[in-house]
Length: 165
Image 1 (cartoon, helix red, strand yellow):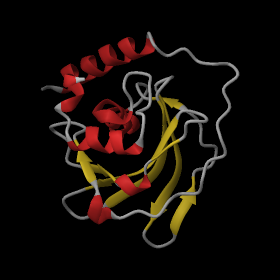
Image 2: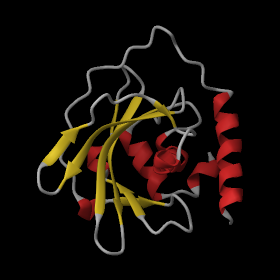
Image 3: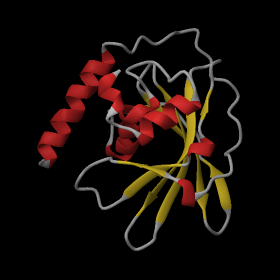
């Protein structure tokens, strides 16, 4: 699939999602827990793009679903064939189609919080393609968070089940 087709697909998906994205003006984000421990050896991989040179995965033990604010928080790892990795602690706000990067992990210094972390549209820019792919792979069911972490993990491990629901 060409780059233009991928872009059009993402735009179409964004339009469909935006129909459901009713932002609650009274919504308040819960206090964000610190970045959790993670294991790169237990990642559940998900596809961002068939042409991507990076492999993406989420550590299932890092996933938290806050029923209080409706945010799915997780550690995601992007790895290259050369062994380089980007590790981020993120949150998905399914009801509005937004993502926030709370912290980045550095091999030499551990976690470093992102200055001025803000909610950003999943559809606004290329740096969040992996977040959109994760949302579509099961972290969000349109605008709704899964009932449990176990349900989210089941969806990630069995992508064919998403269409059967």
